[in-house]
Figure: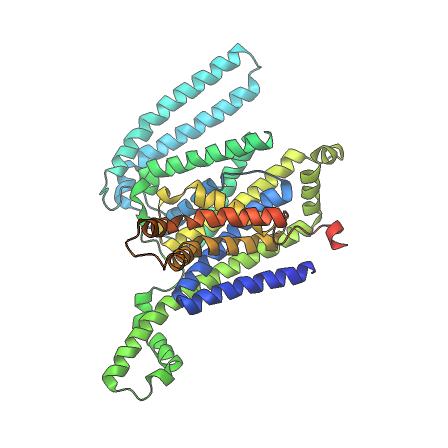
Length: 457
């Protein structure tokens, strides 16, 4: 079977699985799964750019996704004037002093010769800078967080349309990746993994504790939407008229009161589906754009150079390639894609919940998507994003059904049956391990392995 045939068959099976959910459970649930699959596919593409193209073992995906979520808040939420008035000036002074401290540290490091004098100078600059920064920064935080903490207690954002936050999320993640990459990309792969994981945990810790910026564990709810609200659709004449036209056969012949009741229920149901379809359309556009650019980059001279560095960095360096510089490039690009996906996820959720950013969801699952789909293959990463998220959502209800069927011959009060039914939620982890094990055993390159000249021939 050719690669094109395998890809077509794989995506056809995935589409069939989604249709089964629509027919057997509900179409709103199917669309919810589809939207999360689309976001997961974008995030998997970002990790594939780093690992599949350049072999960078980055397990800090969670941190970059969180930065995308922060961008959604800082861009879309309206500013809180009271908070700015209470602590804005001190916060600005603290930020200015911090920037001056960093600049002075860099200048001193570069201009003072290596030795005790440099150590003393750097230590003095850093200590004085920290004391001066906190002199303004600490009162500013206290004043900001004291402003109606039950509702706000933070600075807010720019009040712009939330779609702008998707680009901002990519920029935030790219900026963080540049800083992290400058520090860690000279490390060996296992040290790089540890460093990126630690830094991502630091980012999450900051989001959970810096209430003045993200409200911490109190969460930021009520983010604006790029699609209409269901309530607004239910009051719109054009939507009511369209729903009536689509369901004319079901409404025909009913009494006026019955017709009005049925139409009202249909409008409510269709409004939720319409909103989910709107999200799906936006997410599909982003996925297609990112996928198209990823394919073009992989097939370009730049992509071939990245794969050469991945396969044999010593030979690539001997040919005059800037290995560390090119790795920094791909690390930034992949992180930016993850940041975009993080902003999309927060937009879909409608709120920022820093406590929900955990390695199981934003690091382990994304890596499983890339490995199962096919590392180095962009379509494989998309397929992995769809398949793994689908299994992650459906494993629990399917597990409940299977256990219920397998123990149907037992008494309803049987301790064994009750224990097995209570354990059905753990089917998710079991299914993740099983799928990963089967793919690694029978197709180590993933469902859609990387296409090389050797395979093509």
